[in-house]
Length: 221
Ligand SMILES: [Zn+2]
Image 1 (cartoon, rainbow, N blue to C red):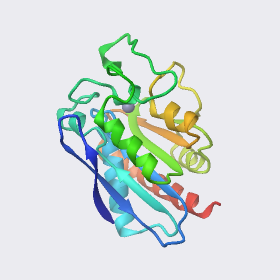
Image 2 (cartoon, rainbow, N blue to C red; image 1 turned 90 degrees about the vertical axis):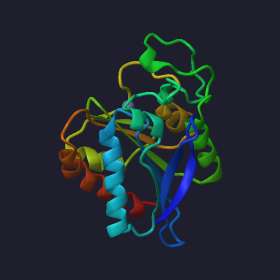
Image 3 (tube, rainbow, N blue to C red; image 1 turned 120 degrees about the vertical axis):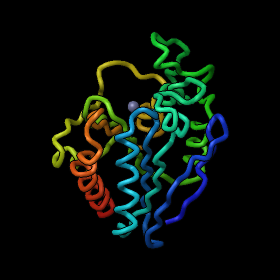
């Protein structure tokens, strides 16, 4: 495992990434991010759990990069947005990005991709060949898929009972699912855990299915 500086936040805090490189034959690379919304600690815990699992049991023929605290300022402050007040999951440079917002909670920032956290992501996607993204959130439990997210989404759904949804029911301009999943043709799974559940339960219920789904993915061509 290699720890690296994924980038810096809007207030210059370091955002760390953890890269697991498998054998040179590994052709697929999965990016797992947690803490896009800093108050959704369940996803951070699951991302960190996955780091531990991969240290103990590396997955053959798969490269995995994990960024557990994508929005480090929000994680430290316990807020959805970064310190500047921007909802990073409404700030990505999608075709439908809009400066309109009904609630301060969804403030998309002054311009598309104005925030350093999202610039870090863009830079990473342009420099690495990523095949699949899993973004760990917590709200109403579901698996929101953008692009072909099989077999990871199917396996997790089967083991956890979470329902797979292509559409969450309202527009989310500037979101990661739209940006990478639809506009960059990069399968993107937004994994919504139940917000507020016991953190032990997050690991007990979700860690093994997530880990196994990656093992399964490594074996598919
Ligand atoms: Zn969220």
